[in-house]
Image (cartoon, rainbow, N blue to C red; front, side, top):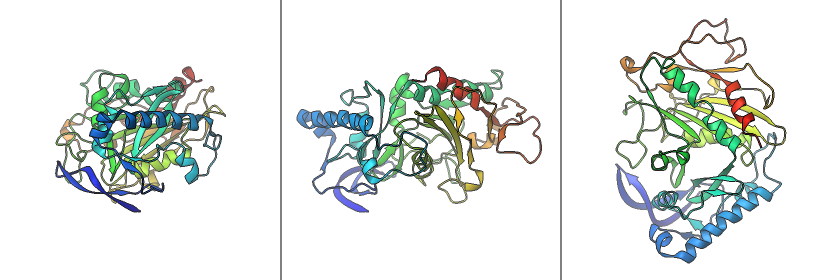
Amino acid sequence: MSIAHAKEDTFTNGTWVTCKFFLTSVETHDDDSRIVTVQDWELQPTLRDDIVQQVFQVVERMVQDTTLPHTEELQHPTCAQVSVNIVQNYLFPIKTWIHMLEDERLPKNCQYGRIIFELEANKLKIRELASPAHDAAANSLNVALALWSTNLGLGHESLEQLGQGRKTQLYILIHLIEWYFQAGSETSADQAFRPLHIQVGNNLAKLVPGTNAIIYPTFIIEVAKTYESHPQLLDDAEQKYFSPLTSIQVWLGIKLFSQSERLKVAVKFRSNSLGYGSDPDLFIESETLPIFQPTTLQIIIPKDTIYFAVPQNQIPKTRITIPGRNVLPVPALPLGAIDDFVVPVEIIRQSVARNWS
């Protein structure tokens, strides 16, 4: 771990303070790395142009580098592979990062797809180049979750959709709630949902650091296609979404394998006894499924994890479902009618197949 002495924008009790920030990435940070302030980004066009040019260079490296994990390999990427998608020689405080995301001068799209940024140890990182199939997977459960949470439309809305804000009127909202998971590091989920009546407190939901009202979601969907391996995707849940700073309860990961045209779905649940990480006893993972072949697989997500920190009298009546035989986790006895969210993996598959390229 290295420590950089700088005026980093961070939070204490909801107020801005000046302090040291920790660089905890596996990357080696050169002493020559320049700390970019909001004023630098606004007032120094040469610096800004260099960062933008580096972003496009990173994109080209990601596309051209054949060492990146394109297939179902089980190994974690090496440090050299990870470095491919990092903008080098610059460090970005949280305040600068947020400003840049809201600034149209940072490119958000390229010929290969939508650019998904995240901040890791104050380094600007490109996590994915989102294709239509990537975004289709991220949005595939929106309708199913809405029908379940409103009891097929008979009840009132009880969940807020927070993800994929780049494509909707929620653009500003999603970037104000980048998920802060360690010093100098922020990310945002491909899709996220939060109960309307969620409460903050001890052993309840948590506020995003530096805000007075923005609460972490309970249910996250994350998608990886070409540039993030399956092990990396699983690690993201542990290191980012189940960080001690967040109160996210459920993570659903979808890995799309480009070369073999297959997909895999995994679900993790927060370990509330530890306060961070996932509970290994509750881990769910599908087999690798063909994208162009129907599946009957269903995955059960307990209702109380999605409606975490909601008072009992404000948890809505949800859709009743009788799961089929091909269901995870595998029950000890055949299941009857349940009001948990039963994920139809076939809906994910169909959405991806329609947008595959």
